Length: 463
Image (cartoon, helix red, strand yellow):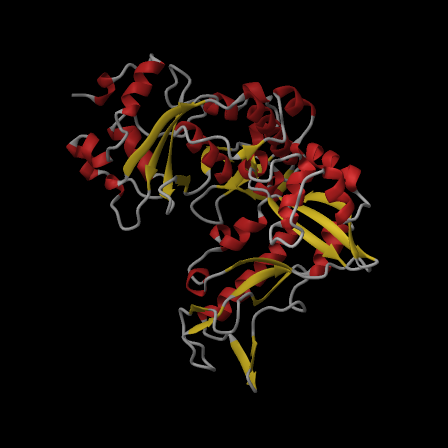
C-alpha cells in the first residue's frame, strides 16, 4: 500500500497520529521492504529515509515546510541515554540553510526561517553505537511550537544573525553570538562556502540551529518530565520583548558592583556556605533571584558557560581559564570545525569579575562574551599544533630529573591560548594513540586548553 495514502497530508491531526505510530519502533520494523535498498548516507540519512520510506515524499531542500499543505516541518534528531535512564539531546537541532543574499531583505514573520520552522514535527530516536541506522529505536514523537517567551528571544537572535550578515560579516558568524537560535556550520567540509551580499569574503555555509541545551528542554517538555528544577529570569512575554537576557542579568548584578563578597551575601539575604565548592555558582543564583536548588532555565537553554574570575590588584586574573581535558585518542581524529575545543569557544560566556582589595574580594563587573572570529583563528593554531604533536608522538621534549618538558604550545606560542596539565597528579593519565618517541610512554598525564590570563584581562575585562 502506498505510504502516502496512510495519512492525509491536508490534515495536521492525521499527519501527527501517523507519525506517532513510529514511537517504540525502528525504521526496519515500520517501513516497506524496499527500505533495505536505500542508499542515503551522511549525517541526515535517518531523516531522509523516514521522509521517503515512511511519509512517502522525496527529501528536498525547499524553503517551505515539508508538509506544505499544513505548514509543518519534519525534523529528526538523535538522543543519548544517561545513567539515570533520562534522555538528552545528542547534538544541536539543525534547521534550514541561511541564505545570506535573501535574509538581509526579510522580516522575521516573512522569513525563510519562520516559514519553515513555525510548526515542527519532531521525531527523536535513540542513537546507539554499532547499530545499523535502520535499527535505531524511535523514542519521542510530537509537534513543537515555540512558547511565546522563547520566541521573543529567538526573534532577537534571528535579528542579530541578519544584522551581522548586513554588516558584511557573514564569515564571522558564531554560535556564541546568540542565545537560543544559533548559526552553525553546515556542509560536507570546510570548503563549503557561499557568497555574502556586502563583502567579497566567502562565508562558510551555515544553517539556523537550536542549541543542544534548548533541544533538551524540548525533549523534557515532550516527555512530560518534571519542570520544577528550573528557575526563570524572564517572567513574561512582556519582559522578553522589553529586555534581552544580557540586559536582565547585568541589571541584577549592577547594584552589587563595588561590594565585597560578605556584603553581597548579606544584601541578598540568602544563606550561603562560603567554603563550599559551588559557592560562587550559588552566589550568582542568589544575585539573580534563583533558588539554590534550581538551575537557571535561560542559561541552560542557551548553554551559557559561567566563569568566575579573581583579579589581582593589577587587573591580571590570578589564574588562567581552564577548559575540560581533551583525550589524546580523540583529538588526533578531529577536524577543527567539529572539534570539542572549537565547540566550547563558540559558546556564549558570562564572566563574573571579582578583584582582591585589602585581602577581600570585591565584585567589579559581569560581562557576556563570545570569542571573536580573529581570536578563534588564533586558538585554532594552538589546537592544530597540539594535534600534530600527539599524532607524531612528540609530546616530551626533554626530561630533567623527574620533570618532563613538553612540546605543547605554551603562552609564548600564542596570545590567546596554551596547553598544559590539568590532572590530579602525574599518574592521572589518558592513553596515547601513538607511543611517545622520547619516553616510550603509552599514556600521558591529562592536559587541557587554557585561555591565557593576559588575554582574559586585555580582551574581556578591560574591553
